[in-house]
Length: 609
Image (cartoon, rainbow, N blue to C red):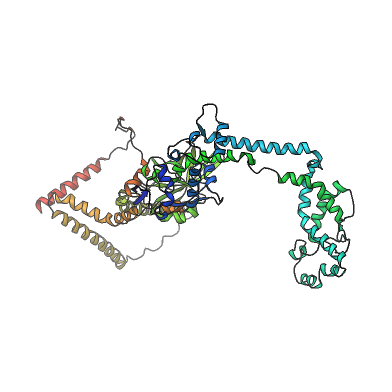
């Protein structure tokens, strides 16, 4: 290879450095297995859509590797100084243009002494040329008068009616000429008996394809096309409505009222509308031929400005992994739950996106965003903090890349570990939630029982007191079983606690904190190990692939880099903080007494063994 490449390590893989125009021009030599992406969507990313549309030459909504390379080659062929591709200019310098036609167009746009044609100026020039061409085309209709508009404003409707039946009418009159040439052709070119019999077994309607394929009317030498309405008009039912429109829109205004049209009438109608048809065909689709250079000038100005940034968000993800800027797929920042999530991508369907993006092993929060009448759906990656307060229905604020703020509401969560700290405390949080839920259920059941007794008592007010039922004999065996069960449970718990306490008391005082810490670590270790593996395997690829990208590398997001993508709330440097909260909950003395008692008990037990 003639070019010496430089690579940088980020995301767990090697990425090519594209710093110079030489790097950009040599991309065709670089093995595409080393490209981070091989395709990106035109929509849903933060990049100039007009530039992407020019690069997307097949208009399939994706920019592919071959199209990017073709754009680089196209720009290089029209520049005598390709270094401008890496200078971050807002357009193309006059001195760098090699193509004579493009250079002439640029000189016509620049004021005296001007040196650079900006993208905005080139785009405005193309728009102006397009408007000028359209105005000239419209002026042609005014100057030509009845030649182009024989029916005035109704001419367009007449041409549309003629175009709708032209092929069928031409077919009919050719058949009639054949019948005039040879009388045997008349019967042969009309609907055959077999064709009509085949229709008998089908469920028919006027729009049936087999009916529409039959001749327009009865074929014969010198035959005409009937224009009458009704079931006895002699017109193929599949074409009756279109012939009626032709009669009202073209035949009557151009030829006058008549019962049928002959071939000469048909040709006369087309002759009178030929000027309008030719005028419509000449409508400019874009720039006129003499202004092709202006279009190329705009394209060249955009390529000079945009090709290098696009390559660094396509061939490599430099902006994303180096934090030199934001990547094209980062459409803004979500502020929610005291955090700011910078990895936010646009999504069309949250459920469809999550089916693939969930493989990224990243905690994703899907939000519906609204701003006045505008709507937007995003997926935000939370890579620091915890997920305790992330839940469907919570609100936040999303800031797009233009600085506009949107109301954001969580509609879906894809839960994955966010941090090792969260994984360490997760067993205890689950235990506390479980205990809390059980206590709430117990309290609710007791409250319901109490309310039931009160209700029964209230219902009995005013009724006669019934004779008390005979007291039941005390069942010793029943209560003995209950007491035995309680005793076994308490004994089992006491045995466990005694074992733990005896083990702790058998240690030296400085070993006790280590033992407690080891026990906690033993409880949290499984969750931390699982979280560690998931955090190390976080991958950006599925998130982008779900949006139509073709990510070609294992774009990992490790723990340090992931932490940098979500910022936690922090007090500014040098801020003063008052630690006295006038509304803080007052501490209860019994808590202090309990701690003191526990310390005295442990110390006495250790001292006396």
